[in-house]
Length: 294
Image (cartoon, rainbow, N blue to C red):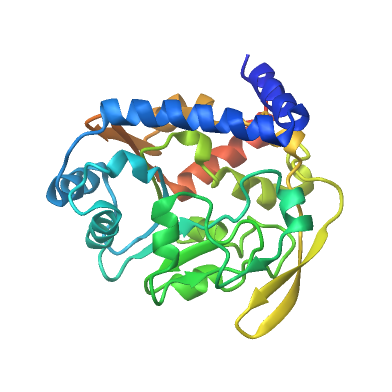
């Protein structure tokens, strides 16, 4: 059923005129916002901090944060307060990472038609990620479609090699290094469908992965940096494969094995995953022929 849904979604994206597709996105966004207004709860920074601590966020560790900040409009102080809570919970010796992906549609179309500017191109991953990107001292990786921002003692090491190899999620990428550091992935108001960590196992296995997730060949694109322009080569995910992705089917096993903790504050869902153990599970599954694309 999920694969069928994925194929329908892919067909809609491929064949609807751009204007109609944008109108459909606005309808979906409006309905989501109506739901948020009904279910949003008021909370204080102290309450959120306590919940995240109980959930198991490691002080002094490395945490990759996926978020939907709309859920937290009831938080006193808004997005800036949310960032302050994250910094308090992780601690000054900890490092926070967030996606700053620049593409919202097909990655190949974006790379062929847009130029990524390391300093200016906004994150398309929500308000929290864009505010985080703009904080002085936050490091951003060079990858033209899947850049990552980081703040903390390991920020430079986590981001410095991203975009210098053809695979966007290999061992030198921020998420690959998150796994190496035995860091965590925190989902704030979002579900497992956004879990970019799943691609680390795919890049680690390469040709041994049961599904061909990339389009053939690579793309060479220009990246604008403070020192000028440089050329970056990258593999691009095949959208016909990506639309079949169903990460939610892993939720039960992640919880049973203790790889993921799940909680909520009001109606806001919260998830916390051990990055290394989650990646090990995906490698184990792939070795038996099972993937999130089945």
